[in-house]
Length: 286
Image (tube, rainbow, N blue to C red; front, side, top):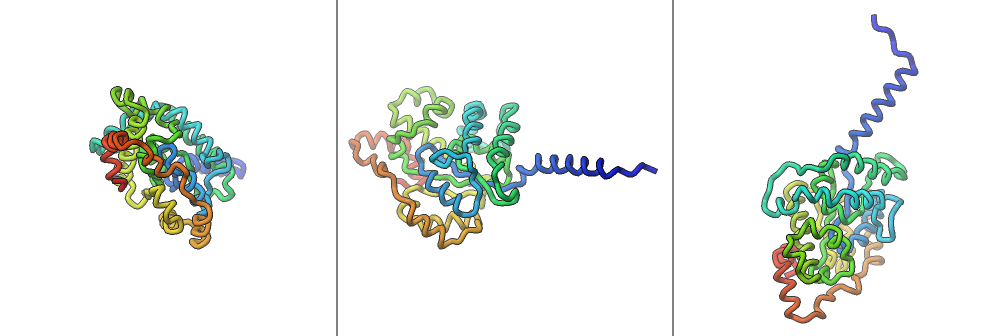
């Protein structure tokens, strides 16, 4: 007859089982991620998600970015872009996954757990805002099969003149072809905007179905209450719809740079629209 486990040994085994379950848990969770190319207006959407009943973290910068996730992205994004997933998705690849470097998954799980460390209820809905997540999107879906993606898009002609060019400068050489990197800065910016957003949209439309919501910044500014309602319906958050609509009406205003591209010479805008033409049409800007 096998000896009975003592109470202490039973407790240790249960703790070990709990740790195993916790290590596996992220794959079955459904966090919400707010993403987009830099300067798209993700801060306004993060505000709404945070007030929809989702825990979006406490260690944030002024723009609402999750700092732990952001540090992870700075360490790994360029290495992950070496998988060339953006080009392959645009060209129609049906690859099930793209390889990520050794150590990336472990580092991400640590960053996510630190981000979640202040959550009041471990079972509460949660997420993060880190715009650069758009550049590692297949990896994020691999980590969380129930991922809810909120993709914020802004007119690429405004984005061409945005002062927020952090993504372009940090990751442009891994997204753009050598000849494209030699173009004038606004052309480079709209080409980067086009390529990244089109790849993200196509990937999500193929892989996420009901887990994908695209919000145009201009629509959010023009009809904040309606877009807030659409967002809450997508998230199925516990917040009061009327409360979120009031917050949206009160808090969301168009940036002073909205429509700024119209002040440039028509010949320059024609060049921009040639560079970003397919994406501008796909997202309803032409």
